[in-house]
Amino acid sequence: MGGSGWLGVRGIMRRMFVLYEVLLYLVFLLALPFFLITGLFRGKYLTNFPQRIGFYRTPAASHDLWIHAVSVGETLASRPVVDEVLRRRPGTSIVFTTTTLTGQAQAQRLFPEATITYFPFDFTASVKRFLDHHRPRLFAAMETEIWPNVTRLARARGLRLVLANGRLSDRSFPRYRALRPLVRRLLGFYDRVLVRDEGDRQRFIEIGAPPAAVETTGNVKFDFAPDDKPLEIANDLQRLIAGRCVLILGSTREGEEEAILPELTPFVAQHDAFVIIAPRKPERFDMVARLLTMPFVKRSEIGNRQPATGNILLLNSVGELTRIYRYATVAFVGGSLVPAGGHNPIEPAAAGVPVCFGPHMTNFREIASTFLENDAAVEVRSPRELIAFAARMFDDPAARAAYGERARRTVEQNRGAAARTAERIIELLA
Figure 1: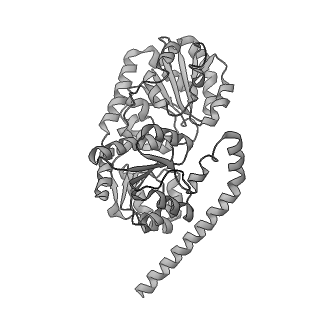
Figure 2: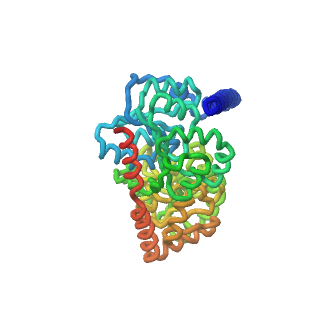
Figure 3: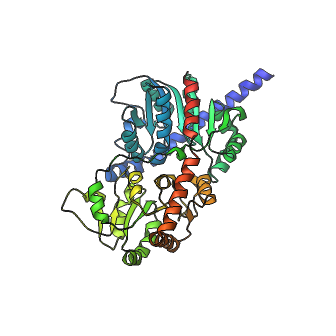
């Protein structure tokens, strides 16, 4: 009975994987016109398509470690883990994958010694080609990237599997719980599920992760270290700022620029302010440029013509925001005044910059709570409150220094997750 019951479960799971693959192909075919049109007009998708289906121009090679990070935020978060792995185990060979173009650019800058490529589409054939070409021994997914075919095929090849910096947002948790039979099977393949806090640990166990495999290691994003490399535009930026206080609107999303920009004109006039706007999505660069009514300079124009002047810098580049935060008097972290889940406040905080963000921080709920509990950041509920906080930081040097120091200290006090994560990875590579 026990054997036949097990065979029955395996048969059900096999059918579920077949159904998943069929649905995946159907979705791909339906989305193909969108990918083609977007690729032709915006230059996205088409250039990385061969890599996404598992065809590569580089020679095949074996790697110790495969790390996957979806986009810029996850790629930055993985840096201290990679640094710690290489410090403890020099010579570890790494293949690093991302899903987005911006993540790919960041990975190429941060990890010049690693093999950088795109994460394969989760088709069986694509994943097999990836594994044949790169031959990793261990797969570490940053945050909650659980792909059925990658997971089962990697395990079938004998890879050790780690879910690092795992989290389940308020929005994703009910979806995973609804798919518990499949998710439970997939999480059972993982040797370690390393999560950020006790709440995430309980959630992962509830959706089927083996309790013995789930460990609270902390949030590796607190191990972020500001990049001290000089900016290519450092001299030009200093000339543009011209000694003024600087407000940085970082990682802004659609709906935020439209709401915030009308408040900037009187603020800039009253405080002789300089503002840096960094839209999160590159496809928003031109749209935001059209919204600006004050004199502004595009990052892409710096160095290409006579020195420009203006009250605003539009940061229409990828990978520079984290290094520009050091110039801020105060920073707003976007994606939080609209329901987009927020972005990472640790980057400006690590530079000792006073930070504010909106109420929609569901993707960073424990980080936001930690900052708020330590009075190391301020939650603003409208563009007007954002501008009021910026004005206070401009006008009150003592308050500005206090907020900046509490922000920096909060980051320092919560470090250590990267070392714990690297230790678990190295144990499995032994």
